[in-house]
Amino acid sequence: MIERLLVCRARGTDPYENLALEEALLNRVGEGELILYLWQNERTVVIGRNQNPWKECRTALLTEEGGHLARRLSGGGAVFHDLGNLNFTFLMPAADYDLPRQLTVIERACQSLGIPAERSGRNDLLADGRKFSGNAFYQHAGKAYHHGTLMVDVDMEMVQRYLSPSKAKLAAKGVDSVRSRVVNLREFVPDLTVDDLKTALVSAFASVYDVGTSLACPPIRKNLPNLSLRDQSADWSRQSILPSSLQTLTPDEFDLGGLRAKYASDAWLYGQKLPFTLSVEDRFPWGGVELQLNVNEGVIQAAKVYTDAMDETLAPRLEAALTGCVFRLPAQRSALEALTLPEEQKVNLLSLLERSL
Image (cartoon, rainbow, N blue to C red; front, side, top):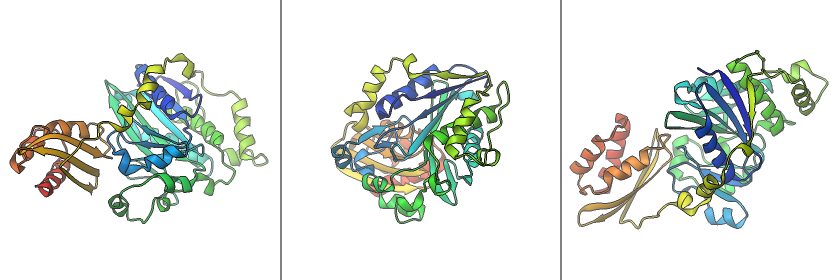
């Protein structure tokens, strides 16, 4: 049961420090606590835990132009961050994880600003039928987080410039380009700022969880019609009416050196790119999968799996199951059957392996 709310704001826009702080907060969160972490990255492509960076991003161009490639702990697909984007993370004990309630915080904050936010499927938020927020999830050692993006005024040219999703992924979404799938919130509220959205999120966070003194999410435009949105946001902040149970965490409370080094390392970002004798890939309703297999003398000597599936454990489990497996369908079927996977995933993965024989 959530009894204590905490808010943490990143101190800068370094993606490696911000991801390090996110992991430190996950390690830090205690029983009965819920942390809302707000952060921004400058010119960064963030890929999912098990994605192939060379297929998802124009890595050389991004680096040449002063950008950053980053890899997060959670599964899912690649996203572009700049200072027109706000990232949020909810961190809590796994027993208190409540995705509908967490999404309600985002919806209520956006709606209070005049944005027609609504949920779509399992992990997207839409406005006027277009995506402005993608979400991803992670659990480890009895703790969990849910994080996502909020596109306020993202440079769409940069999205097109750096992200290079597969044609199969775009076809599966029923659209022709990355740009046609997304929308900036400024299209609905032209003077919206990231600071406005931060204020609304903290307010909605307190309101939805209602720990201690109740605080309704302020209907900014209705209550203060003669002030600009930015002035209204600042006026609300000056009132200091947050519940006493909502406390602040600062990045200075954590030693992030070791974690930052991990997130910035080539080993974490790129991993081991195996030489392989066979590569096969496809996209299914639950995500895309690419298998790279090094086969020698009829045995899979090494396997590398890239995927944007939400289950961050899928790739390492599948790699371990296939490595050392005889390169025959019965042996591969047995390897898959030994894994705890949804039946649909097993059927889809087996069909993919069949194509490799």
